[in-house]
Length: 149
Image (cartoon, rainbow, N blue to C red; front, side, top):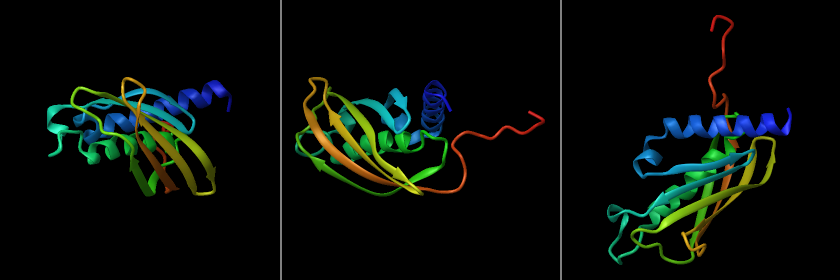
C-alpha cells in the first residue's frame, strides 16, 4: 500500500467511525485530520459541560481523548477497541474554550497498540494527557464490498 493509499484509508475509516458515533457527535466533536495511527479531533466547551467548580467536567475531556484514540487505532481498517485507558488532568478547560485532541500511535504489534493523546486549548496550553492501549478484534471498520455491489 502506498503512503497516499494509507492516508486515504485512514481518512475513510475515521469519517466512517465518526459518522456512526452518536456520542461524539452529540458532544460537538469534529475530525480535523486523520492518518495511519493518528487522529486530530476538536470540541468546544459548552455550558452543559461545566461542572461544580466552573470548569469543563473531566468526563468530557476523557471522551474527547477517547474519541481521538478510537479514530487513530481504527485507521488501518481493523476493528479495534480500547483495552485500557488513563488520563492526567494538567490544567482546567473553561467555557468557550476550543479543545484539540491529537492522538499518535506509539507502538502497534500483533493485536495490541499503544497511543498517546495530548489535549490542548485554543492557546496551545496543555489541558490533559491520555494514554490508551488498543486491542484488535475481528472485523473491519469499512464495509466489505461483495461481487454483486
